[in-house]
Image (cartoon, protein in one colour):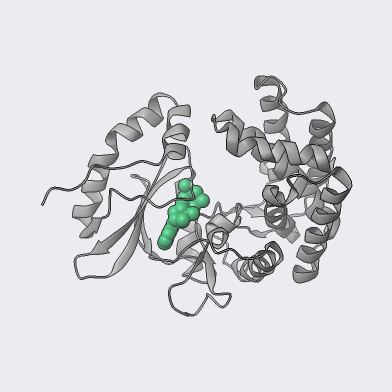
Length: 317
Ligand SMILES: Nc1ncnc2c1ncn2[C@@H]1O[C@H](COP(=O)(O)OP(=O)(O)O)[C@@H](O)[C@H]1O
Ligand SMILES: [Mg+2]
């Protein structure tokens, strides 16, 4: 039987193309890379039906030759794949997906097969936020790798501030000056309050699309979900909660500023209540994340995905 052609999701293709020659090469080599790992890891990959939800990787279901389900992930060269592998290896399935095999050089990993992501289950936002908090409390206990240090010069708020300033100009100022100034003020404040003693190994992008239901109850998945796709750097736990707060653009659509602020404040209070983390820090990270994500996504050409983050930032400023 001949195999179907390798299908790449449009957003992943777009992200790859935005990387220039390196991304084009990744796209061109993808079918061969898949056959390589199929051979080396003795799996058959369902190449014609990649899984939805991401932008930076080709992800598809696979089956081991001895009949077990797995998932293959092949990431774009732009991702910090080594950090991802390191974080998942050290977590050993506690709050995170289990790693079955990996090859850092080829940006390839074989993972435990999980169910649908949290954003596809029709759960109310508050229920999603509560579950994400329970998952994060577990994930933040992941051991830190030897050599992973919290260097103020590499700290996230500063990096995001620099990116916001740069992209706002290079993209032709796609949101108001008020929004950008607020994001930069918050970046400065978060950087100034950076405290290495408060740092944990954060997930780095714990949005509901990276929270996947386990197919059966298991240790380390008490919330019924585990995270995939960790960045795994050292930061204030409030950073991860800011990422959770940055979403919900659909909920904010059609509201005026006061109503939007009220709703996001109530989500922020819930995040603080469920984790014991400072509410102001979460708010500031959340706004900075909203603006930086909007600009970052516009920069790789996904206008439809990026615009809502900037539009909702206008409501909250
Ligand atoms: N282990 C897995 N089991 C089932 N689905 C998965 C698994 N890993 C990823 N997926 C699906 O693929 C999507 C993208 O995966 P992710 O690791 O987040 O890649 P990206 O780097 O592109 O964000 C997820 O949103 C999820 O729908
Ligand atoms: Mg993802």
